Length: 426
Image 1 (tube, rainbow, N blue to C red):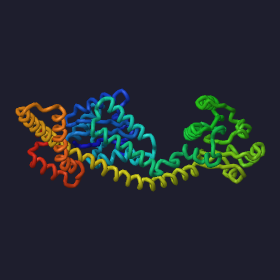
Image 2: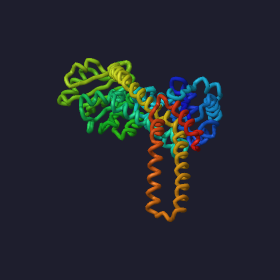
Image 3: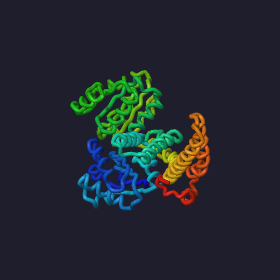
Image 4: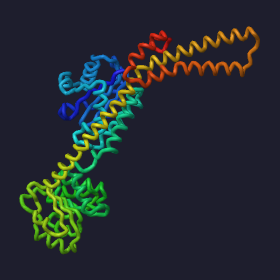
């Protein structure tokens, strides 16, 4: 038995190649079935996301497996073999286990600490279970990877703090308002980044979105997307007195909201706090507005600063996560090594069982020549002999299961002492 991981990701392959080698929902079951027909492959799981395609295998200790999987990928997706070979990485044994644990824990993700990969791995494992392509080894490996990822999230802060502009906006808004439920947001302009920030705010509880855009039709479409209201761009200042959050991305070359404008609006708001995000480049909102009481203005550099700080914190937490992964790899390796002793343990037990049956048969034949033996007496003899046999084979069995350092030597010695061939037959 040997664990092998083969794959490509955002570091080794461009988006075009990743798209070509991705397994669609329809192709995944076919791909799994095809993998298990590759010579030397006993178990297989496929993880296919927008940033990576990885195949987890349990198979023979055969260096040729990697080449056969490479050929399988090329033929399955009709991609030139050379392109696959250039992007493919291969990790065997402990390195493969470590790689999977790092993937599950989002240590290998484009965004460190992102939560989506664990759910994607669970889905990949469930499909392999449904298609019966995952067996005792990969079942254990996948369950362990999931538990490692959960441990990393529990014992570190790697998933905390925003590492995207949109989430950074939400994080700052929560610091100002604590609770976003019931708050109103105005979207000034229809920039992609501003729209994404608004989506994050809505998912965090913002009640209503008002859209003001120079192109009225585009504003209407965006308002429908948020089930919100549309206002004419020239009227946005009148509407701003109702908003708690303003996200601005208009593409204008000058300020669309000045300090004088905001002073007037704040009087109408009766000094109610407002959070303003100016994602525009060049800035569309007068920075002097930030000097006003109860006005919290952040531009794109401010948000990026929050993201960079949070990324640094995640990187610090990643060191702790790597230690957890290293520890869990050793635990899994110990389990894998214990499997080496299974054939010998089975053979030892079979041999002992055969001896028990043979000797009991001889004993009962001799006793029957002396007269009848009752059922209770016969049962008592059988139980006593079974207990003796179990006690005799317990020490070597226990040693085979627990002694990691000298297991290979123990296997050889026990085979020789008891005349075992290691295949489960004495």
